[in-house]
Length: 88
View 1: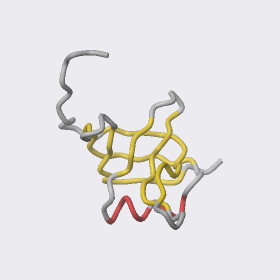
View 2: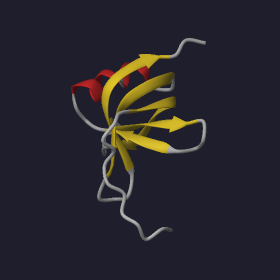
View 3: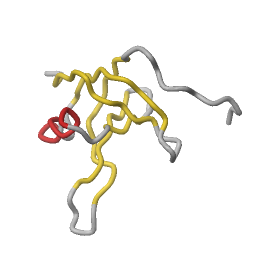
View 4: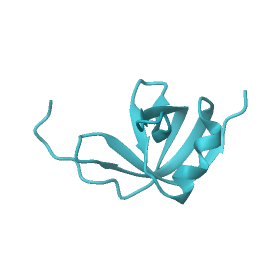
């Protein structure tokens, strides 16, 4: 691990990967999703209107652009600004 602290990105980044569920409530409902990239990185999706709009596309390839921050658990979280489903 590095000792440096990463500040939030100022410019949007583009992430491509598979939209996957990563957390569930006690009833089995999905409470958190993430984009799992082709480089085995995981970017949690911030829960907001655009993030919720991705739910119908679970287990599909997506391209997401937005601002990334590190949350209090040390996880990368992206605030979705734009997204598209990648067709095969």
